[in-house]
Amino acid sequence: MNVGVPRESVPYEKRVALVPDAIKKLVAAGLGVVVEAGAGFGAGVTDEMYRAAGATVVDGATQILGKSDIILKVQPPSLEEARAIKEGTILISFLQPVRNRDILQALASQRVTAFSMHRVPRITRAQSMDALSSQSSIAGYKAALMAASNLGKLMPLMMTAAGTIRPSSAFILGAGVAGLQAIATTKRLGAVVSAFDVRPAVKEQVESLGAKFIDIELQAKDTETAGGYAKELSEDSSRKVRELLHETLRGMDAVITTALVPDRPAPRLITEDMVKDMRPGSVIVDMAAEAGGNCELTEVGKSVVRHGVTIIGPYDLATTVPAHASQMYSRNISSLVLSQVKNRRLDLNFEDEIVNAMVVTHMGEMRA
Image 1: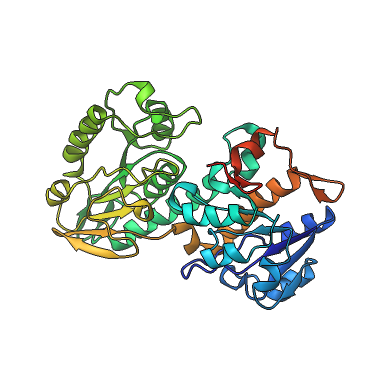
Image 2: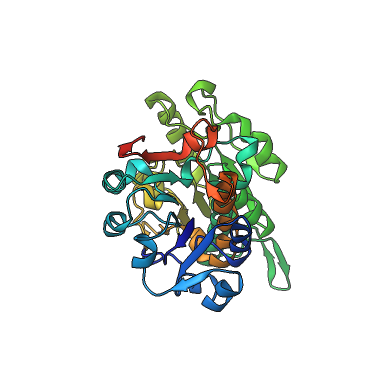
């Protein structure tokens, strides 16, 4: 069986689905690997490095989309790419089914078996495959650096001959993987950090990183899914959260928002009125920008100033650290493939909890 790795077609995407170390493992398991020329350049991987690892390098995506048995990607395929994939192929990438129904329909019509890396179940056996966590950790780190570099203040306490500079205050909205990494990084940069999450269970994790957890009484059943993700709040709980945030944001210099519900539009938590009451010169980094944004003034892919506040709406921040992001993603996706390889072939077991959770199209049908 051939595993194909095309170049990513999304303009800003620098990551690649496989790096040479993972290719060696797939080749050792009896799978052939074909990589499109230039696929790894953005992540610092040359075609020569792929060849040395045992892969075949080809020009153009046609040979990969139309001939591979398994296709590995980071971003969802475009509609054109989806229609070019040969019937019966297995596709694995971040698909986000709710936001990409047209692409899923095209994949189903090609009878493609598609796996979404957003849907790796949170079980011990799948930890090495959890790409959402690995990429979110990188994004949280980068968001903290972005906040610091766009703030017109220093983050840490500094005692100088010219006087003492007080540390900046940072607020992290959402304490999942991305939020916890943002907390740890802003803390290392010297800021006074506080955080909020609708899930009270994360309070201990927040405080273990040296941040203050801002608490609010919500019903536990209203805050967390069975898989451990934050869930969409009821209107009453949303109102309580907005009131708390409005008061909290008044005293913050840097705000990083990470609130996302998988496969859903981002919850709007920061209103224009809240922004108006923030300190002039403060910064918001909205990590949920691509899903609509946690701040109603966010513009995806742009940095704008509204009411004296800089609001940054980046695309997927993990792609701005492409070397390490690709290394981690490659391990995640290759672990998934290798878990299903038997006798030098990919033998999907739909009774496997991992496969059952991740497959979104199969045998011409949409399962998401």
